[in-house]
Length: 273
Image 1 (cartoon, one colour):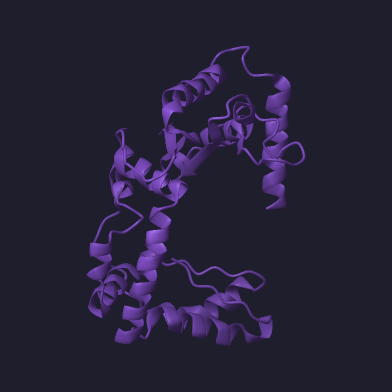
Image 2: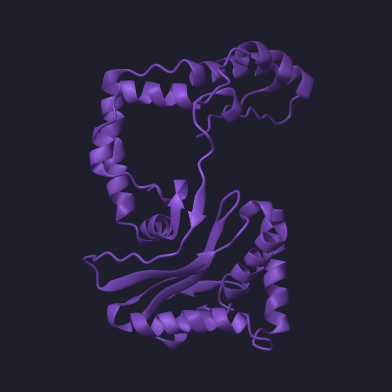
């Protein structure tokens, strides 16, 4: 959860004061909370019908035990239990000094500290809870949907997450190498047309889209292939996805040209960002 503010540098004291006030003293009016709950229900109903969003949630709930297994898409029952008292309790538990970061750009550090310290010095330091832990256990999840297509993901753990930079960099190159695309993919080289997965869309009419993905946390993550295909073609597309993953681990199966192209694409994207 983040709060941001942008203004001219000359207004930095006022900007910091307003920002901190919004964080520390939110006006949680009952009618506003009820209105936002209604909006949230509509947004989550839309999110739960989005295959990519749902699959990512399902991969975590079935693949992990612990905090990462908690759903990101809340149930309607849990949302209905929200009220002003619950929100105030959440703020008191989580808005503590060990969990808050104040960051700024284009300002002098010492000046920022002198402005922010009096406003934040009395924030509670005790959280009352330890850091939640998650363990990757693997698993399987299935849900029937009213659709002519089937969306599925084949994934495995990236141990170490952000903390193991070498493994993360390797996974990023593999993601770029596998690439992917859909039936409407078009564009210059690097847009997915010349990746290892995109030719499958052209070869098999049953595959509507297929692409590699990764989702990384501080000490773990998942990497895999997501595809949308006709229901009857699911066994075949699983074999195709497994074949592509296996071929990357087989010497001589990956071309040097494609690997170099993926590395160039990866670092180009990072530099532009």
